[in-house]
Length: 393
Image 1 (cartoon, rainbow, N blue to C red):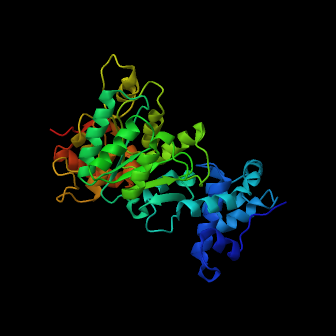
Image 2 (image 1 turned 120 degrees about the vertical axis):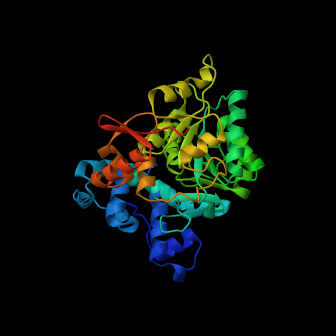
Image 3 (image 1 turned 30 degrees about the vertical axis):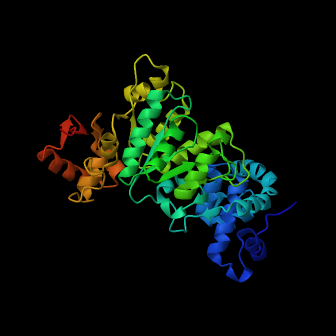
């Protein structure tokens, strides 16, 4: 049985370093790169093992048959055995992936790097173990805020126009535009951002050395030059249907808010919106003509979820908690308990004190005290046991 190569010599070769440059951080980087080759995005078993043992130590569990090896990570013997059967056939992919990464100039970013986008850590054990990056990795934290603009591939002229207007306005105020580089709404958002001189992030379902769709090869090259392209799968990986669905969770996680511009009833962009909701991130949808099949998914979000109605860029800035007039964080606002409670409230539906406490990270007693103050100032209202934020006048 071929084992996973973990020697410093192998790590140095893979990372393009000298052996004397390999330290503990480089060993962890190499191990995480290997994990990305062995697993599919969001593999919770791998995530649990890495969280419990560290990336390098967890790799040794792949090559042993001890059924109790995963017990400390809460992984039972049957689940671990099934995971090993998925991972072991991919051992031979590791060298090819690192070779392909060197050829295309990819960077390997891990949670230990300053460039790591900490937003993705909210995915827990389903967070990416590393990111393969082309472009300016320092842009990934998106200190000016990031919004996902997604929608139908078969977009109408109306949808593309709205996507471009939103993206250009937001990008001009320093907000990073995140999307998936697909035809239609995604492409319109990326192009408008580049034209406006803003920063855009393209999240791919396949390897970053394989531009997809092929028709967007030039567009992705432009993104690399002034923005950043990322994938959690290694170089050489083909985009597949399930990887697009996994990619959608990453788009939502890397953004402070998600806006669906145009979507059919079963559009994949609805999947991105639901991931945003699962992460307690705000989401919005752009309404379209009631007769348009291309907007049925947006209307469904507005009717069945807490999606906000988006008609202009100021609506998105409000969704993100940015000042609608200047597109920046309100200098007079303090990131204190009031801010946290406000962000945990909705203008559409009521939430209990316990729910607001869970969302804000405060205790129920602290949350109750802040809600009382916000009620006195007229910012919130109570209906029975539920609280809601008053819409801005």
